[in-house]
Image (tube, rainbow, N blue to C red; front, side, top):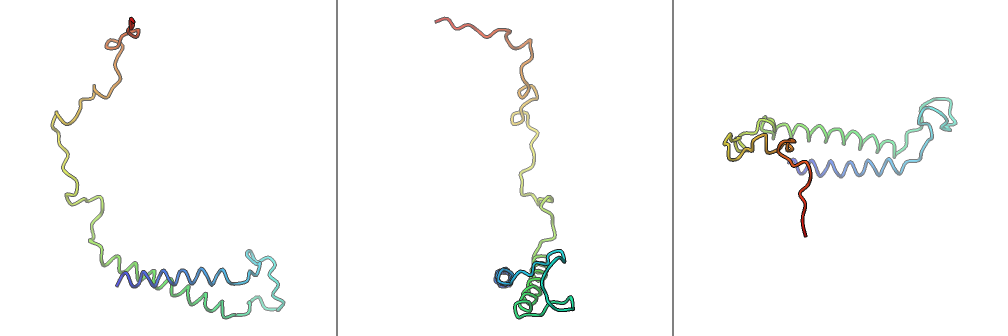
Length: 119
């Protein structure tokens, strides 16, 4: 069921993108310009405008449907709960290096000058 709704959602989204790209730009992005020619501020309703609304509403409906389906199929647990998916941490001394291994050598341990290599 979820795959069918997801496929329909993908087709609707591609159709919505195509319909929006086909439409002619009115040039009134911020209310500036846009040669309507009429006295009213409402643009004429075209077939492409109606299709845009139709695909937009269908897109929202399929989005909500996918959300509901995903919620119903979820187990209710968090990823961080981790029902024993990771092995438990061990405190064995042989597997955990001591803090001294990871630190740089102190001045007492390291030679002051590099050793000479006589050839």
